[in-house]
Amino acid sequence: MRLPVQRAIEVCPVEVAVSVLGGTWKLTLVKHLLGGTRRFGELCRLVPLANTRTLTRQLRELEEDGILVRTVYPQVPPKVEYALSPLGESLAPLVDGMDAWGAAFASRLGDGGGTRRAGRT
Amino acid sequence: MRLPVQRAIEVCPVEVAVSVLGGTWKLTLVKHLLGGTRRFGELCRLVPLANTRTLTRQLRELEEDGILVRTVYPQVPPKVEYALSPLGESLAPLVDGMDAWGAAFASRLGDGGGTRRAGRT
DNA sequence: CGGTATCCAACTAGATACTG
DNA sequence: CAGTATCTAGTTGGATACCG
Image 1 (cartoon, protein in one colour):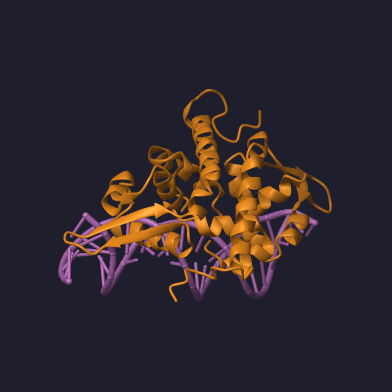
Image 2 (cartoon, rainbow over the protein chains, first blue to last red):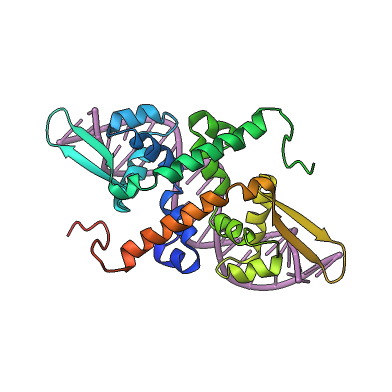
């Protein structure tokens, strides 16, 4: 993943989206940011499985790609806020859709309702 | 990426979607399959940047996750068809949305309209 | 035609520890 | 609080060659 965007568009726009949003916690981060501005610490708490380094990196990449805006308040103690840019907010419906799809997919597995796996039913 | 789905759902459903669809050419593959059943060779031609090994793997993973169905015709020369499962087709709107978003994102960069990158000039 | 086998290079995420 | 530094492990994607 993370193939150069310029290259991705030549093949398929969906790949652009994947390369921008494909990071392991990126969409989760965006989803939380959809709920409003968050501080670094809050995001850490919201995504407990990722450590600070990983989170920082994802956040920075998202910033690089113009998905979010990082605001540093030069004070002590430090305060940094992350907020979605208009571009970032523009993928609200996508995040919403993926969230729903992901939930549905997950329930297919764990629900025990019927198909447990690649049911050839 | 590709963090265990079971683990992903505990954090956020979007991560499930990412782990299932996050492979480098997966969404492109799905998108093409949305247009109808395809043979392996066709897919190779449609996604020229990926080699057979990569394509095979992606296809298999998609199959594992129940996104597509692989049909082998026991004949000579071999013939294998890939088609989306209902689950796979269910993400048509998502693929569509990502495609549109990706295209928009790409045009932001290449258009020369304004922001070229994270313009920290 | 439709893969598979082997090997490899790159990248990515994570652990841990430390800092302004 | 909000990172950064360093290092490592693991995974993914790719090249090439060969097989049924």
